[in-house]
Length: 354
Image 1: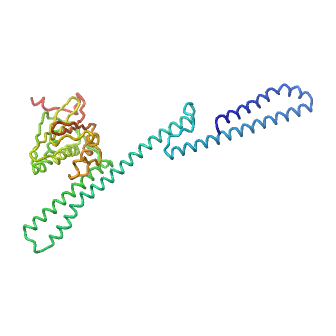
Image 2: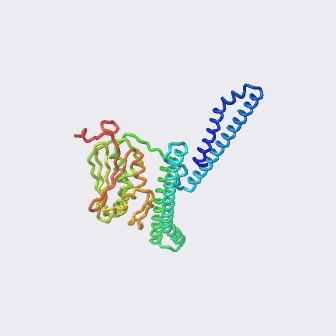
Image 3: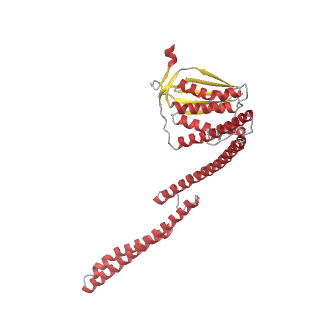
């Protein structure tokens, strides 16, 4: 039912009510006789019944119309369209409801787009994982069969065992990343944040990455500008720093350098990893911390694109943030951990040492 029809019916109802009021004096005059009183009572009864009937029909039609338009509004929500059923220039309950429905439609549209993008990311992830699992699994199957040959020489046997070990390491690397990501995102792991030496945490990450850097002929230069104790989770912060170093070593050329620096900068402590791997293209910089994202130059490298994402998640959950800037030779990835000024949660040993 449209508003025009509603107001038309309302006007008829008001007219009938006015008729009752106007006829009241005439009825009082007629009611002076016995027959006149009966006629007056009958007339009033008829008019009141007519008013009640008109009111019922009017309200029934209005409610039916509102329900029908609300049904159309639900259709709008179901179809995720932005069609306006009620006038948006009126301050009514249904107009406010319509505004909220349209906002919900926009939210659902964005969520659908994100879900489609996530689905595409998962497809790419499955493709990448399948590609990376294919080689080590094939090697394991093939060289395990070779090792069953009793006529193998000791030299060949050692060679095949080494290939099997490398394949197992690669499988372990892939599954370990996925397990860490799953445990952190599902909330199974809670960060154990406590005041402790950040320098020791950094050195632990350096020790973990050193064998890989040494084998690749990459030098890690550690510049310790401050001795700092800060509230952080040692194990997971080590993981975040290791992921930055591992990312730098992975794309480094033999003979290149990686500079690792820690220093206090105002309200933050900065852990910076600078590489010489060439600057990341500007169009990729906004995506580099996304889950499962792999740049154009990473297709031939091991990994599934969760290292930088995992590092950022660890840092953000400790009230910090990560940043990236490029240089002429490469990139600088920085972990910024918050430290309130004058708070005992962050303490620089350097001043005391001096």
